[in-house]
Image (cartoon, rainbow, N blue to C red; front, top):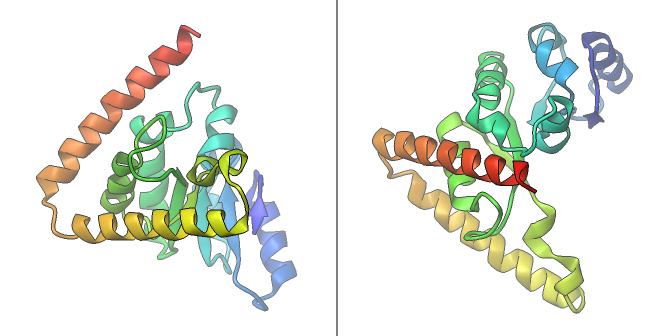
Length: 183
């Protein structure tokens, strides 16, 4: 995985070092990389790309990482990545019913945008509230199972459902962003 890169040259150097001996993943998390995505996508040897919303939103001077979902940045990046046939994902997800922006909204956006991967957020399993590895395993097993079941249900949803979810998600992101301004 190549994190925090900024340029096509860095990606090309990374790809050359790997030389096809392993799968490569770019962790797109700088505004420079986002602005150079067309050039970066011309590099051979990219197997996956994950858009890291936490660092990327900070690079753009935003208050809330999902602002990049609401303003179209994530969708535009994903369209370009999909156009090159590279699997992609973005952000992190919490357990269902949890998170500043509830996971259900984010997961439906993953589905709508065509994402094939996500990272579980730190809040998915709060280690400060867990009493050992067995409990952590139970939390992960249950949480991931619930997410997978939710994903299965999304396959039967209409385009109207996803458009309504997009609109509601954008409204919720705006509310969260505005509440962070007052803090």
